[in-house]
Image 1 (cartoon, one colour):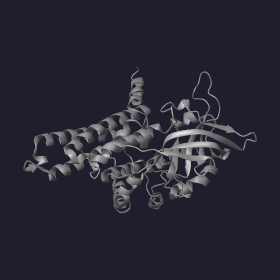
Image 2 (cartoon, helix red, strand yellow):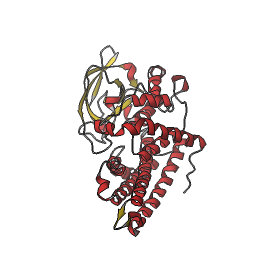
Image 3 (cartoon, one colour):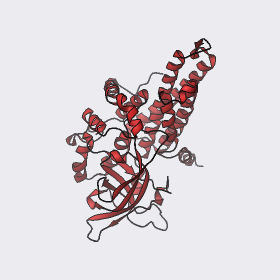
Image 4 (cartoon, rainbow, N blue to C red):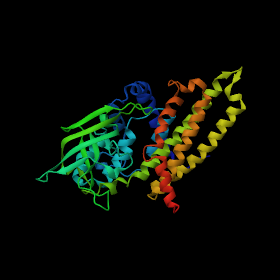
Length: 385
């Protein structure tokens, strides 16, 4: 089906991103996967390309108001090449919106220019050992000093993506005790420079997939955080955390559709070339039927995702909309990529083939950003159940 969400400007941008990936990413990506870290300079190159500052006002070096469609083009082109920009999506797509929404004028002046240029990368530290999706259970504390000039941060976080390639970490911490009737009360958001004294990296976690982005444990020991680094109001952090979840979950749906589309392309190319019993694998009816099923299912997913992108641009994407897109998108991507790997036979299990990378990378999409079970709960509540 013909897609209608992109215009000539988006397609021209796609050509630029595709060229950038071919020149600046593909030649290095295998090494990044082995090292579990992209070159830090990648983000400065992306900054020079103008894609680090979506939404940042032009006076700070950003693009000003911009359609989310440009970020979806990047996701699609990365999937097409079976590569990633490390934790680019975390920094630009997840953390930056918090700053766009909550930063005061002084914070914007301090941080926006560096973010737009790629000199300042962002990560977010919410998850703690034992808390998972239960953010109300956060135990990391940030106590205000007696003179009111700074917070003293203590605690630990885990599963933190991109921390080793970031200059600022958005930390969710408890600044006041929870109340008897509200466990969510008392959380605040602090922007903590990663070179702060007492800010320490723990284990670099060894993941199944998404290996080009680092994922680490963090610890904070008496880290002094100036009150000027408080994002938004003290104790209102939990209410802020929900503001960007719809966009985050839409982004996961976008990536799912892009990955599934890429998987079909990789499988099609492989079965046309691979010969078994004297004829191409593509000649067998099973191959044709499997790819036909995959194609139809991904078309349905893409239509759903495109509708979500349009709703997001209009500012009317709901939490329930995003939950449905994430749930359906990640489940479809899992099924389609698995079937496409099967068509590769034993070679599909070899990392030299991009389908293997897609298979490993996609599994976590049903976990992060809210598990599939959480998405079902959100949808069920909307049904009055």
